[in-house]
Amino acid sequence: MKKIQMVDLKGQYNDIKDVVNPSIQEVIENTAFINGPKVHDFQKNLETYLGVKHVIPCANGTDALQIAMMGLGLKPGDEVITADFTFAATVEVIALLQLTPVLVDVNEDDFNINIEAVKKAITPKTKAIVPVHLFGQCANIEAIMDIANEHNLFVIEDNAQAIGADYTYKDGSKVKAGTIGNVGATSFFPSKNLGCYGDGGAIFTNDDQLAHTIRGIVNHGMYERYHHDVVGVNSRLDSIQAAVLNAKLPFLDAYNKARQTAARKYNTAFKDIDSIITPKTVRGCDGVCDTCDCHVFHQYTLRVQGANRDALAKHLNEKGIPCGVYYPIPLHRQKAYLDSRYKENDFGVTNTLVKDVISLPMHTELDDEQIDYITSTIINFING
Image (cartoon, rainbow, N blue to C red; front, side, top):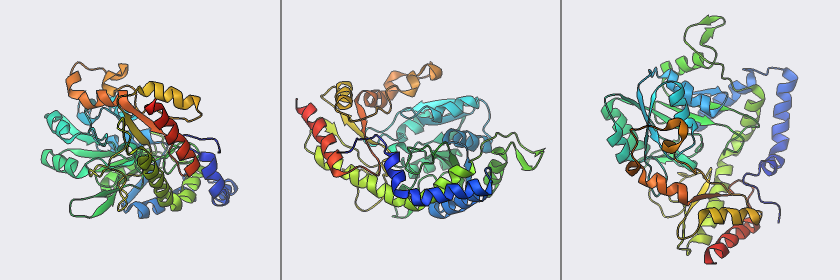
């Protein structure tokens, strides 16, 4: 059996290097390293793939979130509601812009932001909601948009983990994650479902005026060289990373299908183990759907109950199986984001999840032998 990786970037590269290498070499030879043709090609191709009017590439996913908020004109003191159970970048940019983060609890089944908690958190100072499409599936964005429309709020989709996922409306129509709210943001960190070979990110919107504003912000506030019309930042996707992403984009759906296949095999192996709760979809499906792409499994995250999660993680590492705990500390308990407004009783689900969750290897190169070894090792540990 080949060595198990949490994310097998080398294996993925070996399969596509005949496509990636010439794309990188083209950039090197034409020396258009910043805002070159590859950046524009990738932008247009990603717009087509997502079915969105505007993609604005930038330097990384954290910048994408910050620039999206800057583009909406949010002001210091404005309240922004987001999930407590997620990576810190989401709340980090809210704080950096001197906005007021308002953290709320998540759902027990799908780990995404809880709709009733969002409703409860709205005040006259609330200006935006940031749903995080966690671990590879959309939050209940239809309900979030209804709330936003009722209260005249912006919706900023944090789509760093769900590129390529579909959201299915109640009427059966489908749209891509990140393209529903006023603006969406994503990351192309190497381990993402669509990852480059360094840092990268992008912002999505169907709003022409907002897209124009954001294009200025990412480039020092310039629309014309040395004319600074808005306060901006320096956040550009370099051409080599765009070349990698443009080469990999045609494989994204296949990559996501491979992740879904691996998730089904994990679920099947664990289906009779009472101590293990396998991932469920936002639409309430028990397992991984065969009929839609609502979950693209950036992470495959279990909940372990009636067994010691930390002891399991230690055991897996000893057996050569990498794993991760995403996330071990709720944001409301992080030193940087402590706030007397937060009450522990409001975060019952999050406080439970941080003790229970464990993420298993998940990538496009997982094979049956590896999955069998991973699942049998876990089951043997659980059964004692």
